[in-house]
Amino acid sequence: MPATLHVQEPTLFRHSEVTSPNWELVPFEVGCARCGHDLRGLTEPKCPSCGLEFEWSQAVPIEQLVCRKCSYHLYGLTETRCPECGEPFAWAEVLDDYHRKRKPLFEYHWRDRPFRSLVYTWWLALRPWKLWRLVDLHDPPELRPLAFMGAMALFLFALGVPIFLGASMWLIDLVWSPAHGAPTAASIADLPSYLWRPLCDVGSYALVVPLVTWWAISLGVLLILRQSMRRARVRSAHVMRVWAYSVIPVVPTALVAFWVCFVAVLLLTNSLLHVTRGRANAAPLVVFLCCFFLHVVWSIRQGYRHYLRIPHCVAVAILSQIIAVLATLAFLTLLPAL
Image (cartoon, rainbow, N blue to C red; front, side, top):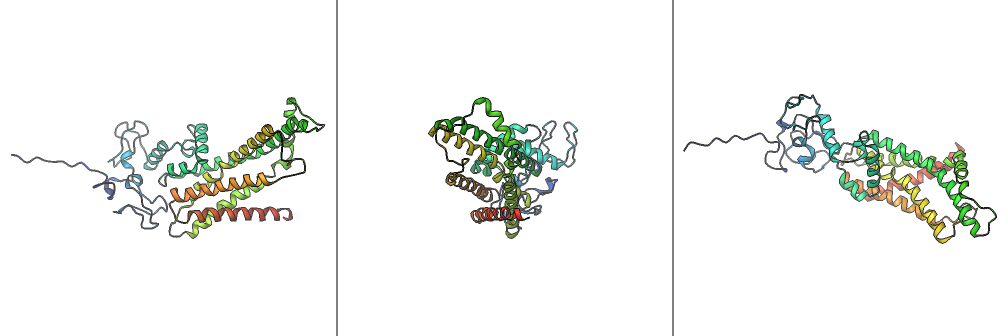
């Protein structure tokens, strides 16, 4: 019988996902997702620089790359032009398109569907146990949309504080004051004037200063601690992504949650902690702030453990926030003397 000729087509992975890819079929640079070390030529899915263990299908997803115009698979091509439709491409852009399609985050969809992706990302950031299992180190961080998200959160906070103060005073005079025999009372028609007065008062925006200070110091501490973790060699962009998802979305959300709790206490119990009447009881506020910072610490811990995959994540999260809070308090104390 004549011998049967078997023609073996080129494959990306020589034997399985565990072994190294066929580097002759990979036309672009492949770097470690955590430290950026060049992985070309390696045989084991472990970075020799930082020790990160990964899967070759995540680090080299060439079999999943398609033309953005006709969805033709680009695997095996040596030229940067689609043979199906003739569209020229760059491998970096094709890789970015691949990551955008996989993750519905605001980072990747802030141009095509900004509002829906922002709401989804915001809601996901409040659940860090899900967020940091969705975001992978191989998803390249996009710092511009993260900075835009921070600016939007700062704007909402700066606008929300005076609105919260005006609405709170209006509710006090509408519900609490008449129930306790106070001579002053408000009506529904007075609400715009109550809201307008804090918006025109510069003192209503005083909380923006400690917020920005805390943000800046938190990021600086995490970057300094990153420099001390020489074995992990995490790139700054990944640390900034953990910081952004841990501290930015929780700020305006915490303000809304605090105001909802305030309204619930006022309407359901018909009583009020006299915060605005000179007899302040700070215990509920302290409890709320403790819950707020615990959520931030927990989110940083989840990001360092499941996203950056480095040890001592609990210590890093707690230490960064302790330093940030103490440094912010020290700055606010010294601010009048500057």
